[in-house]
Image (cartoon, rainbow, N blue to C red; front, side, top):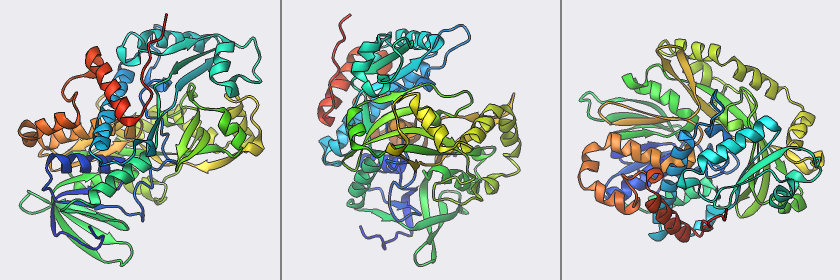
Length: 504
C-alpha cells in the first residue's frame, strides 16, 4: 500500500517500526486478516533503532551463554529460572519464524538467522567454580541438553583459538559451549515482516511520521492520535480501537501522554553503548563463535562483555563490547531533552529512589564514559590477548532505556528487562525496557494479545495461534518430548544446526 494513503480510523495503530511492532502486526494480521492497521515510524527507514543489526546484540538470546541471566546466590548455588524462561521463549520465537518461512511470509531464513556456537568464558578460581555450578544446574533442564563444559586449556583452544592464544598456560580458565546457538539479524527480520505487511489489504505503512499526542475519545471507546508528517510538517488525526506503543526508548513519553493509570510512576534510565569493530579480515575469519564473559560489578545487563561473530548484510563481522555510556537521549536519534522531559510528578520519587539504590551503576557508567582507547583495548585483551589497536575501530551502538518503576519498599527500582504496560480495558499497551527484548518478542507479543484481546483469544483465535505456535499453551521447559520435537522441526525449517547428544 502507498505511504501517502491514510485511514481516518483503524482497528490497530502501531507506533514504531521495530521488531516488536513487526511481530505484533504480523501476528494480528494472521489471526484476523480483515483488520485495518496503520504503522507510524518517525525515521525514514524501518528497524533503524534498537532492531538494527549494529544496535542490537543479535545473539538470539537463548540464555545459553549470557551469565547475567544466571546470578549466583549467597549460598553459592546458581538461580536458573530466568535463563529457563528465556530459553523457552526463544524456542517460541523460532516456532513463529518457522511459520513465517513455511508460509513464504519471510522468503529465506538465512537472511536473518544462522547457527553459531554460544560460549561462556571465565578465568580465576571463583569464576571457574561459578561456571561449573551454572553448567551443572542448567543441564538438568532439557532445554540446555548438549551443553559442553571444559577447564582444559587445549580443548578450549580448539574451540576458540583467538581467546586462548597468548594466554599463560597456567591460567585457570573454564568455558561452556552450545553448538545450537544462533546469530539473528533482527533488522533484516523486521524489514521482511514489514515488507509482507505492506502488501496486505488494509495495512498502511508510514515513514517520517512522528506521533505527537494521543488521548481517549470522548466516548472512551477509541484513541485519538495526532501524527506529524516530518516531510510536509502537516499534522493529522487518526482514531484507533487499539494502540501499541513499540517505540523503544520513545515509548515512555507516549505512555505518559496516554494518561492511563497503569502508566503512572514509570520512569526511564537511558544507557548508551559502543562496540569495538574488527577491521582485519584475517582476524574476523579466525573466530566463529559468540563468547560471553562476566559483567563488571554495577554494569547493566546490556554491558556483558562478548567477543561476537555476526553476519550483517551478508558479511561476516567481529565485534567486542559493548562499552556502556550515558546520554540523556532515549533514542540513538533522539533529543538530549528526552530524560528531563520524562520526569513527572508521579514518577520523580521512584526515579530518585532508583538512583539512590543504584550508585554502583552510576559509578560504573562514569568510569565507562571516561575510558580512553587504551582502556578499551585493555578490556578487549582480556578476551583476545593478542589484540592490536590498529585492527579495531569504535562503532556507536544503540540506546537502551531501563525501566524504573514504583516499589512499596524501596520507593523505586531499576528493572533490567522488558515490561508491558496496558490499560485495564486492553485498548492500549506500551513496551518498556531492553534485554532480552527482540529474542523474546514473540512470547512478549503473545502475552500482550492474551491481555488485550481476551475475547478473541478465547474464541476463534486460539486455533490459529496453535497453528502458528504448535506448542502454544504448553510450557516447553516442562515437556521434554515436545521441546525436542519442536527444536528439531524449527531447526529443519530455519536451516539451523540440529542438536546432537553429547557423550558422557
